[in-house]
Image 1 (cartoon, rainbow, N blue to C red):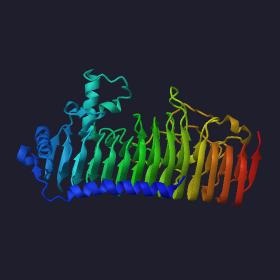
Image 2: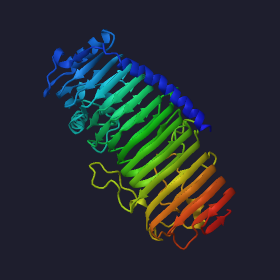
Image 3: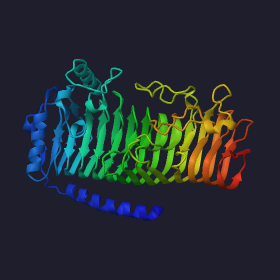
Image 4: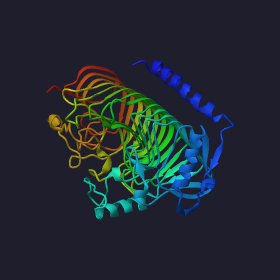
Length: 509
């Protein structure tokens, strides 16, 4: 993996895209279309869908333009952004989503702001897009209960995510930018960018805890993307990359300088993993009060994942540090691949309590205490995770695993369930026989400058390696373990050790 070459190509491509966007913005002659001139009323009561759409259409017909939403509360249903149009929300402006489900249209998802196949589009400014998600979701519930909407996935008084509108959906767009705005109170995922090429998301805030499935940012099969300087507070995954629609896949993506709070995982690549993920760079994230993993990499639907670099992550009060999984949830597709992963310079604090306690939508209950489950890297017996490097990592665990609470006898490691077809999650295997890292079915693992701290003594080993081929351990420090071996090697071959001060147990069977 030639990381420097990848980075050079990535930055070169972005210079081209950024030059196009800056050039367009530099044209002072671009006219401004104030929605008030098209009949909009900013009282939060009158529906302004038609007025806003007329302004967008006029700007597009004239070749280019800025559609201005001035200070005020402008209620609207779905609007369609068009090529060479910037939707600008002034300071004090709110684009207020209707609370009536039938005021929304869709491309793949129902959404308030839609764009399909458009070029050179933007949503900017210091204003707010507010989806009024709780009231909108309540309207969807009513429509399903009255059989006006047929929802085959209905359950637990919670309509399916496809029936609940998002705030933004862009599909197949080129050279798009979302900048400066506050996005809040979506009834579902906040914003989805599918099969887009040349996308910048910068300096936005997401406050979306109004209902379930509130991912902060979803990038689906998009390429040449930058996400930077964003602040995400979401009731589901914070920043999530998905691959769902062949032949496109996620490629050349940079995520940097963001803050994330999540009642699921802060950074997730995968779960939806049909095609692939390549050349993804993530750096300088601050994660806090996150229920599940700070970092989750998951291939379960046949996709490839390769050339991923994640660095400079600081996570506090987080349920799990690292979860890497190659599985086979989609049995109708071949098994995918997960390789060439580098994670370095991260610090994670895993408390012995619920990290998201008190938030409106907490993550589901898992084995208590919540965080006895370690970080894990796991493939399957005939399909190995390949070439993973973990370097300069500090993880502080609450600990407290006892014989009664987290006991997996070391002579029964082969009985830890595989669960190849299950939904991937850090808690999917139940209690595991390690408190630091559990590694199984991996080829080529380098762990250098690793410090694992356990605040309370734990009955389990810190590190368990099971069916690992090619293991390089360099400068491993383990603080506060129990009396049993701190490192367990089972069916693990080609081991290189340097500065590993730990009690070891080797199990050949």
